[in-house]
Image (spheres, one colour):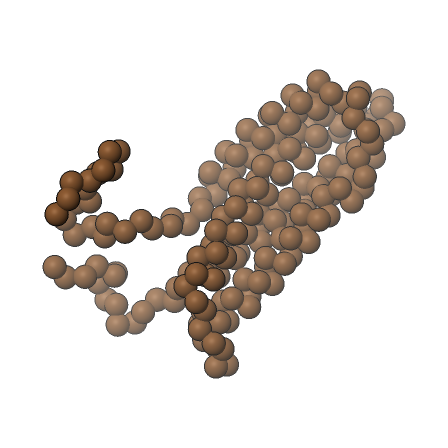
Length: 176
């Protein structure tokens, strides 16, 4: 047996040494969104007078991606559960779907934070600055669509989970 490489630890006895993918934690996404909102708000405060007017549908593309991920999750889940004689899902396809889901939820959290930072700047100024009303509407639509992307990513990640094996009573640990 070889010694672990630099920066690696040996797994304790009984622990599976293979790397695993953990489910995305909501608090991580919330933290990312809060940091992005603060940074986005500072950026908007510094540059708002130079920004062009935001198109109303600026965030709609992100919403379409979220809807596509929700649909893809439904289809993938049916194949994973082998409903109606569906063909099995190759492991690489499932791994790529999980990667897409995790990246989408994190990217959606960043975008949601940036749109929230824009809203924090435009909503209080809407009664004074005419452009702030339209930018606030665009930021609200962008925030909603970014949250849809986060939800779509989390749903796709949930759909990629393997069904529980009824014969597996010990939680997947193999006796050694």
